[in-house]
Length: 375
Ligand code: GMT
Picture 1: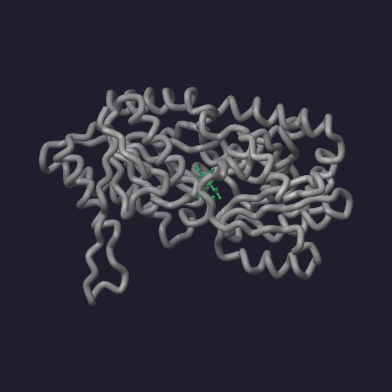
Picture 2: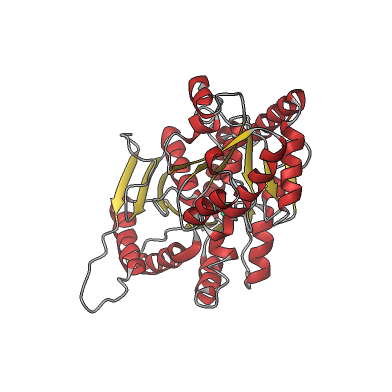
């Protein structure tokens, strides 16, 4: 197939899923065309089946807000027509689904019907989408998509709850490439971080409020009262300085390292004993899946789709949002006993294997075929 992919070309979950999916489809012999405003973060190599089309937004003094959606729609018209695409797959509803709808309408004037699949990732529904500023457009463009997928049952339920959806929504979960995400031998790095054999806790995110990153620091402060440990905070975003200040206020800053944005996340995860994800909202929790693939158990909130990934008492624990004491208690329970920790680690990996790319890729391929056939 010739597949067009629209996404945010950033480190964020939806961009990562879209890029990894595109790469895997290209490896499987499909021709994949990315249409975005920047080269996607993980698309920095050559493949004969991968193409990148930049969306350039012209600046004009009149435009206080440059119309990205129109530039994207125009680019899509161009790419679909001249590359003869079979299907467009847009990741994150805003503004990609509505831009794709507009492109589809324009393409009809050329006698071309391009089926559009929209994948809902989370905040496009739970935070931004249900905001009245956008909700009529989100509702319309979901209903006008030829296929709609959501990354968890919970997100599907939320979508039906928040919007008047007449379309069917297919759940296709996030996936992981286990050839890349696996435990790496990084003992020297582990020794440098935890020279006295301390346990290593880790959190990776974009440090947005929804991630409750200050909870991570508070949980860690409680864990260190019981177990000598270190905390790695990976990523960057609005809440980072607040976390740094809190670590100082709680007197744990010597044991916390802020590593900023990192590419080789699997190498850092490989030294960790426990992943913390106390999110306020999480449609799936790709970062937790990445950790599990590297044999790291997860203590998380029970927000959104997290219970569909993290199996309570098996791959880690689920606690109510904001239950800092409970999450610290669960963390100590996992870390205090080596044999128990190893069991949780094995369970985490076994669970991650259920989301292997080799399982989820054909699900997308079959879905595309189904959508193309019925369009
Ligand atoms: O929250 C993030 O880390 C970024 C966000 C995004 O929209 O890119 O991630 C969302 O999509 C991911 C991929 O489907 C999911 O695994 C994340 O759970 C989801 N984030 C939220 O729902 C808050």
